[in-house]
Length: 508
Image 1 (tube, one colour):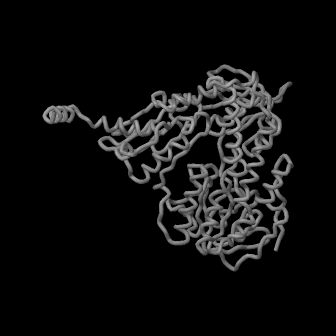
Image 2 (tube, one colour):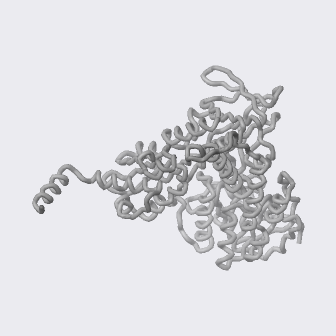
Image 3 (cartoon, one colour):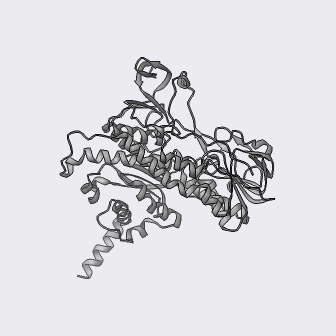
């Protein structure tokens, strides 16, 4: 038996972070003696790795799980959990400031206790970490090894002085934050999603590089906390992967919350300034500068494949896109599969979960389930949120033979009553049918609403069935039923309308 590597440092060193480490990288953990051979060895204990390990062990497989850093991966420690805790606080603060519109009398100035915001996040993260703990997985019958993994053959992996042999393996090491090659950035120092949640003092001025989902979510949150936020994006607009009409609504919301948005800019260099960090920008051949106390880099992710010695296992990979897999998530070594962010263009926790389940079926039971059949929704958790599933409007337009129905929230009673009319539901169907091929929702709770349409697409349920489904009134999800009604009305051709009129006249 061997002692694991020293635990990564998580700041600040308070009781909550100590609880977190006790669960996800226990300081006194003793690695077990390996079994002679495992049905499944899982490398990486983020969402995908944990699901593969728990699912396989629950089915009776002999499973080993290897993690060199923190169990729970990015989602628990540096991603979904801490970020959504902050967003909830930011939303409460924004609601308090806007309470006068609902008849409340808020204080003249709503003070933000940033230290309390961050303490709440750490407390809740520590509470949730018990689900991903090493001891919980050991109790499931999983051999948990804390240490760096390195493949040493096509059917073996080394960890902490042991060699583990396997019939099958799953690589689920996820991704790490990527830093753009900006001169001076490293010397100036910067935050990423792996360090921003260690802050205990609110930066007075925050520069966010990258206006994708993470950049926009955290820019809005920190602006609501009271920071002066500048959001920088190289593309012509924020959230470049979303529809332009949807992104425009979020852009307006960010601007109202005080974000300075700089789109279509090239960052020339970063230098230390007299009062902080200075970023030099170029846009349309014009130069400008912006200064901040902290820089947050949210400019993409890179697959975590370093140090795995994948060549020894015969596993091909690309340092930019990750591990190469076929549609059954099998790598170039038939014994080894990959799941989650390290092998997927969809880098979401729920996709990591779904691909892990595919790996269990295909690796252990010779299944042939294909990742390409998955219908994947996603959501950017700004306020309002943008949720998407299937084809975007741009993709639908390029494909042709698509009809699009749009329902503005301004015409939905509950959205009017809630004072949340900035948004819409947009659904695309195949021409001549009610089959849904894509949808976009912009609403405060779009992430909750998109599942009805995802279920419909997965189950082959069309707008006609949704129109016959009773929706509680009043809800913002009624916007979906309104679109279904609009589809039914579109089927009433002039000829049918004439026939109905004659029939009704005859039956009077």
